[in-house]
Length: 191
Image (cartoon, rainbow, N blue to C red; front, side, top):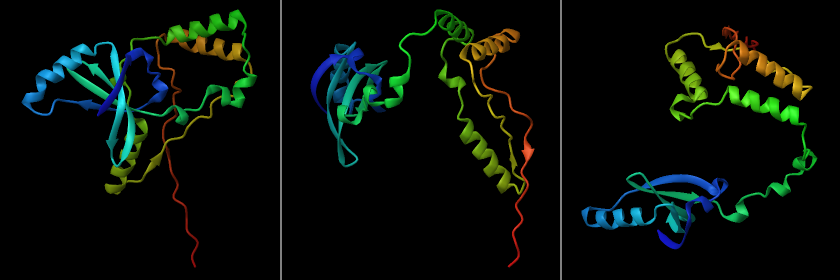
């Protein structure tokens, strides 16, 4: 890793971050130097280059807990400017204060301390369930999904959301699904 600059860690916009890698010292001789660099870099990030997987990457190195973390970064030319998104030109700059108040109320009802371990990859779990059922020779059952209602008026949608939440405070914002519906196998035409 060839670090060429140091900057405040907060100067790195998350939109540039691609992938994190943990760094550790290479053998007993490097542990003291590693610890000194980690402590000296508190609040800072080293910016540099690295050859990895046959290509050169822009990287940032930052201290984290007992070690260092290296993030591969996107180059500025790889990040699309928000000014280039035509659809955003029609978004109003000002909104009604009562709509903001109601939106904050809805958001406040779902606000909680973040714990990412509570979130699961439901797609992978469902895929594994289907694979396990196929292996066991069971009939695969597809779950029916409700179509979300069309939002016509933002205030009405916010009120409906508040009404749903007020009946059971702090419930998940996720829609409930009906019981699974058995998939009917398609019949093949005889040739």
